[in-house]
Image (tube, rainbow, N blue to C red; front, side, top):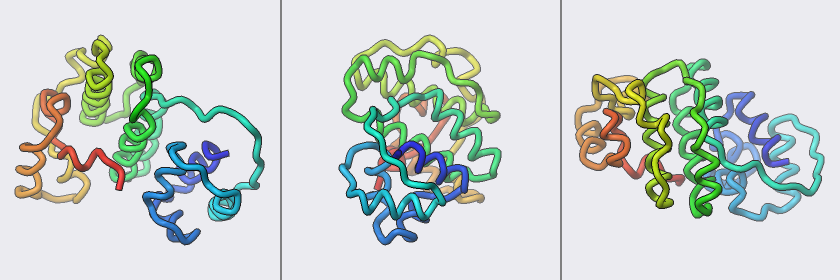
Length: 197
């Protein structure tokens, strides 16, 4: 059910904050709900379903395993809609979903090369994320993540894209605090931006 709600939210181009406002909770509560890290009350799920126009039906089952392939699809859809902030939220959601997962789950989540997002910068970012979660889990980096097309020729300061203008101070901050796996690809995004709030 949660996966259906999240998919409906994305299709409606609503952010987690939009849903939180509609149902009277916080964005971080929605992030925990969507990542499977909370045990929501039935009434919360029903309010979420009404907010996105989904008929609530509940059946026992396993949540979908984290997948960088699915994340790339979500990023591509967000970029096509012109919403880079939502694209980044999908990356953050993937990191939330994979946090604390065992090595087998991490390996399955990153082993298959995702289709391109239509933007080489985001493709490089996703490769850096694959390397980051692999190293954190003590795994070797998947070969596709080290392919030449996954490294940028020019530096990309993600904050400037999100803000829609040059942000020299924030760009310098992101250059100094970017994860090494991203920075080595020319992608600069401060570490704190990869965490849910």
